[in-house]
Length: 119
Image (cartoon, rainbow, N blue to C red):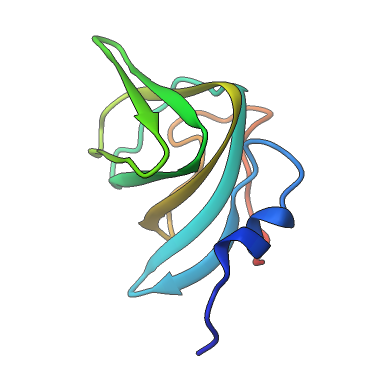
């Protein structure tokens, strides 16, 4: 039962779109990730995802609207909802989602990550 210093953990992340596991509870994972640029359009058929902005801001694009998320704000993307994060500048995000969640959902691309590193 060690406390987690989010700033220290974020300092270990140098790349973008590569989530790292910072903690686990009840079959859920707390992941830290840095975004910059455009991600792929995707959806998660079986999992909801929570995106909490730790620093910076980004746009969560949906097919019918765009939601701007700033530091201190979070958004829950319901399962089955197609979405795409876009970050013009680097943003640090905490994700909360089931351990089974693939970062690219129903899409396999060069951004798909398996066997996430624990930090």
